[in-house]
Length: 571
Image (cartoon, rainbow, N blue to C red; front, side, top):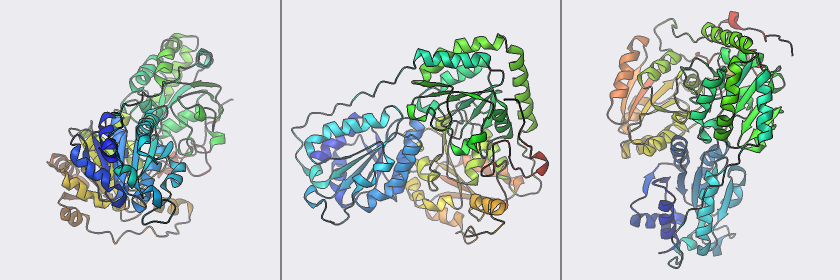
């Protein structure tokens, strides 16, 4: 029993069943130990960034801690993008990196880097294990920190001599309990109730903290009981089903017109697990200018960080929502009942007026229509996106029924996320239907993970929207840089069908709208992994769009007649 064997057994005790990694010199003792711990399924990716994103997707879809492993030096640095993504999107992860033996540390040894120091800005906590006797404490703390409070990544840098050291005297691993979640203070709850009682145009603004706090059911109960129109952030999608009559859709830069215009008219924002991200608010100084703010969040640092909260409710979102539901429900028939009925009616009418249309002219495939149809054919699928136009189209047109079914790199916006995250999601639930939606730019960031799909025969279905351009950059250059296109041309893309087939992946092609249903049916019917290559118009843009330094009511649309000014209401 050396340190590496002890660690492998400890991972099992922590509930880890799958880990994603790539071996190398400084982590070899740990890989040797895996021979003796069959309870751990190790997934060999083809690039360490794929390991981090796969662990990230595993954790997002399951709520459990994702684990990735790499060797020292370049192996560790290749994990960093996926680790950083986990930090900014609050994903529980533990990254284990090999390190040169402790006597060699600081000597510029082969593949030596200060991984511990480099990791500081992108983790909740980092460790170097300098003695095998530290393993029980460090492993227990790492998993406790990753899970507790606002989740996030923790890094364990493990020198090779510590892995090889005798660990026969160490006790069996015992997990540390997750930190208790703070209960919201009564005073803050009373402040929130007082504002809710007088509001005539309230809006609920829900974010990613709802899923992180395991509060989806309580959030839905709160919305149903209060009958308050609701908007969601990119990471909040699915907290309320997309078909719910009070769901106005996503707000922000590419949010729905109904959501953005409604927020700008609100007199009260009830913010649940959201953080006033710049992509959600637009020009912050003009965001919801007439609204008081009730801000509910587990993380005290978020309350008042960007927008002053008139009532800040810190603590467990589940307990907060449960406590507020009955008193707030009473306001449905209270003194402002008539005004609230009128408000709900206006919101519904606006949602109908600005509902997305899918009757695009011509015979080319219209991406929003394709994604809407796929959402109907695979209503329970877990969808993993890359970053770009296709990411926004998915957010706008897929009807999610739970936030853990929408895996997307939100705050970091990391291209290359989609395919490895889909692999992680599939492995956390082999029976789930997992779909990766990617673009011709993004998929080439980690396209080598097609080999991982094939090796483990994972039935992930890939929809590749190919516009032969870096679509979102092209759109911005068109609108805001006088059509001075610079380095966005991808017309020399490879033949993606041949490429997929070379990896042993079934591949299909779609370029005519009339063939859409049959192509989607064939994709979903494929027994193993499959890729549908979809040719779309290079000039297609994502609408609506809030331009830089504009408020959310100042949206651009492909139809100039729909460009409405901000509604002027009395403060």
